[in-house]
Image (cartoon, rainbow, N blue to C red):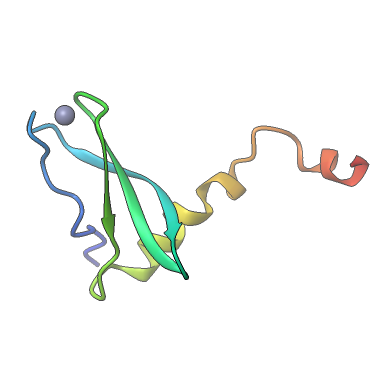
Length: 77
Ligand SMILES: [Zn+2]
């Protein structure tokens, strides 16, 4: 399965762009935020119809799957 995203393109410094987050723009339009692995420059691209939905969901849910605190803390709020 090819799970590359169309946003995976080289930036000006030609280092690999790594998708780091999904942002939502306007009324539910998904935007993929990429960070250059060389110079850390950020870029964002709208998702396209041929983006792999599983890859998009993986990026979007990554912070929830790896919370920086024990989930039990939520019950004490
Ligand atoms: Zn770069």
